[in-house]
Image (cartoon, rainbow, N blue to C red):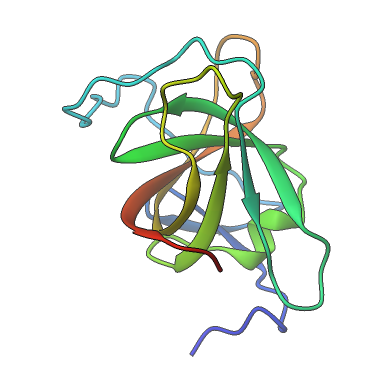
Length: 138
């Protein structure tokens, strides 16, 4: 069983396991498989993850829908050693008061970890989080 107390040396990019020093080819032509509409022009939308024994991670949301969120992570972030594709964890969505997007506590699953090749966050990674269910708190 995977433990967050042991550092994981692999990072997962679209199902490709690799060590941080290796490279993994990520297809730029990968078809977007998300069917639902999502907000992509977000300002100040964040997600918060808590892990025992480490600081709270508060990360920027790149895109958001009722089914999930794309979370922006720096390629060298320790956060990537704490997660892997398929991992279920609790997250807190933080949105401005005027936003109509989902907010609150949720159980979520890491669906993919992909490199951003273009735009404002070029060189970062996006962690695709699928929202499984709403929680009262965590």
